[in-house]
Every structure is written in structure tokens, then in C-alpha cells.
Picture 1 (cartoon, rainbow, N blue to C red):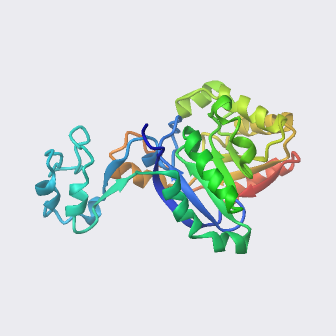
Picture 2: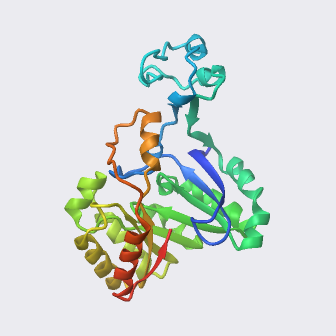
Picture 3: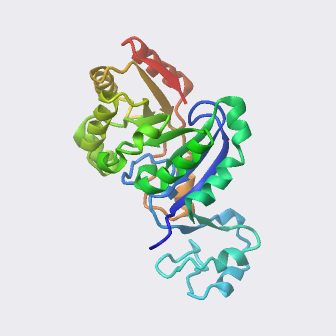
Amino acid sequence: MKPLSAPIFDIQRFSIHDGPGIRTTVFFKGCNLACDWCQNPESQSVTPLVSFYENRCDQHFACARACPENAISKDGFRIDYARCSRCLQCIEACPNGALQLIGKSLGPAQLFEQLLADKAYYESSDGGVTFSGGEPTLYPAFIERVLGFCEEHSIHTTLETCGTFSQKRWTSILPRLNLIYFDLKIIDAKRHKQATGSSNRRILENARYLTTNGYPVEFRLPLVPGLTDDPDNLEKTADFLKALGQSKIHLLGYHRMGEAKIDIIQGKQKKLGLQNYAADKLADVAQWFEQRSIATAAT
């Protein structure tokens, strides 16, 4: 039997925006949505891949000499993904860090060893561990094992999800989480599919399931100019929250950092050319919700 593992592309320490207190956020690779505004495009594919930072490359091409698959291009983007076997010899040969691996397979115990190193910070700040991505709910067995370790050491756990998870696969796991951050992106079914590549039927069903059954869920709305912050989507989001008996939403202002990541993986995601979400616009949206008796928190 193959050992249990999951692809992880980042472990961010001293995070203060992914749950209460000081947290360590684990970013899983793989997602079943493809949002037009995705801010972690390197997370969408489950497969680890080699990224290329052109500004670090001195064009000495030690990578090409090291590559056994002839997968190094000397013109344009450096990696021919069709040839690349991810042997990592090019990364080892690059003296400037122009080539980097995105995604590493870890076992539950390997990951928890890194998480446990920050326990003193969790205890001093009422913080803990957050599972993010990508979409962490793609790995129920893995997260269930890590949750067991966290429970043994009394570490608070938060799940960040786009809401596409299978209720059947997560029935035994959801009650063990201390907090669930659940993203509501676009309520209209047609618009949601156009912007994310997927239906929102299961997402809305899961939102109802969590609230009906009293899980510790808090909803979030990414504010993307012209895509999620228009009056129609805001109105439908507010109506949906009220139908769920919810009176709070976290507002996530769009930022452009994800667009720079498209280039380092030769991603196909279209660049929107948007500016970071302005503070005054975010305040206006917060006021709009608060006038409808829905409290807001900005992230």
C-alpha cells in the first residue's frame, strides 16, 4: 500500500489572517475550481512543477547541462513541461535560484513535525494551524491524520475551503475542526460557472449543511472588481446569508500578487489587469452589508 501523503506547496509561519492568533498555514496543491482571479495559480494543479524566475537567471545554462531529459529551453520560458520528469537536477545545478520546485509530497507525520515547532506561538496567542490551498478538502484522509496529531497536542485547527467537498468523505472530519472558513464567490449559478469553471450547486448545498448542523463556519467573500462586487452578487450574497441565519461575513480584498505567479509557471490563466482592491471601496462594501445587519471583517 502506498504511504499516505499530500502535495504541499508552502508552509507559511506567523500568519495572522487565516484564523485567530498566530498561525501556521499549510497550502495544499490542487483545486477543483479555476477562478478567473485566482491568487495562487501555482496551486491549481495537483502535480508538482518547476517554476522559472527569469529575473534571477544569468543564462549560464548549468541547468541545461544537468537535465537528462533535454527539457531546458534557452529561449523564452525555461522549462519544457512535456519533457520534464521533475528529477530536480536542474534546480540543484542553478546557482541563482532561478528554478524552484512548487509542490512537495509530505506524509502526515512529516508535516506535523514542522507544525509542532511553532506550538509555543499558538499557545501564547490562542493561534493554531490552518489548512489552505488550493483546496485542502481534496485530501480528507491526510488531513484527518494531521488533525489527530493536532488534537493530541491541543492545537486549534482551521479549514479554508471553496466548499466543493464531498459530505460523505468529510462527515467524520468536519466535527473535529475548530473553525471553518467557507468562501462564497458568486451566487448566480451561470455566472459562477463562467468565472470559476464549475457549478456552485454543491457549494451552496454544503453551506446549508454546515449551518443547519451547527458547525463553526464563517463565510468569506472575495471582492474582485466587476466580478464579485457588483450590486447583484452582493444582494444575492446577503440574501443567502440571511436564509442561512448568518449575520457575519469576511471581506477579502483582491490583490494582484497572483498575476506575477502566472509567468513563473507559464500559466494559462488570463491576466485581469486589475488594481489591488481600494480601501475606500472595501469600506463601502462593508457599510453596505452592515446596513443590512450583516457584520463584516476585512482581511
